[in-house]
Image (cartoon, rainbow, N blue to C red; front, side, top):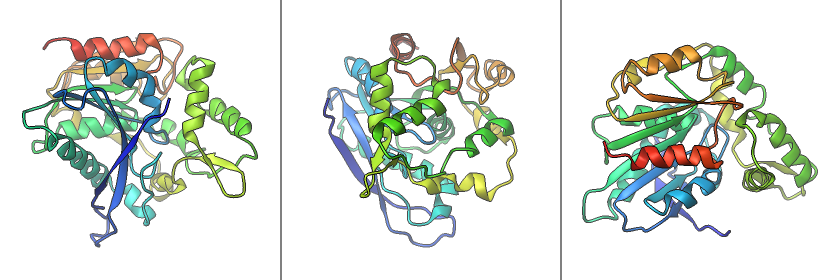
Length: 298
C-alpha cells in the first residue's frame, strides 16, 4: 500500500535559547479529511508512524487519523544540534504546532483523541495536562507507559538506542530488528516485515541501518540513569484514559499501573498477556480495544 506522507514546518525551540533552523515533521493522514473527530497517533522512542498503518486502516472508518513521525524519526527531519533532542519542550511544541495545523483545516470545532505508544503516550500525557493547547485532548490511550519509568528499563534501552548499527543486507537488518523487538509480542510475518520495511534506511554504500537519528540517544549519555518521575503531570489529568500494559513489561510496573487507576485520570488498565514493552497495536484484539474505547460515549 502506498501512503502519502505530508509535512509541516515548525520552529525548533532550543535548550540554549538560540535561534535554530526550523524543521519539518511528517505524518500520514487517513480517513475523511472533513471528519471533525480526529485521532492523533504517536509512536515510541525509536519507532515511526508507519507502525500505526494497521490501526489507522480500521479507525479510518469512524475517524480522521493522523499518525506523526516524531522529530529525528521516520520521515521527519533530523535536528542539527543533538542537545535539542534532550529538550522536552521541543516535543511539546511540535505536538502543539501539529494540533494547530489540524485545527486550522476546519471551520467547526473538532474532537481530538490521542493514542501514544511508550514515548508517544508520555507526550500525550504531558500535553493533556497543559491548559492552553490548541485543541483539548478528549480521550487518551497510552500503550505501556506511565508516570514512573524505572531506571532498569532505561538501562536496557541504553544498550541499543543510538548505536548506529549497520547491516549488509535487508534480511540481516530485519532479523536484528525482530530480535530486539521480541517484547512487542507475537506478530505475523506480514507485520514484522511491514515494520522492517519502514524502519530500515539504505545508505549509499548499500548497507542498512535504522531510520532514526542516532543522536536521539543523547538523554542516555548526558544524564545519570535514574527513575523518571512524572506523577505531577499524571495527577493533573482528568480526561478519560485507557492504559494498555504488557504483562511482561519492565517499563510500566504492576504497582505503577495500579496507582494510575486511583490517581489523576483514574485510568482503565487492560493487561495483555505474552507481551512486554510495548503493545504495538497491530493485532485485531489490541485494535478493537482502542476502537471500542474511542467510540464509547462519555
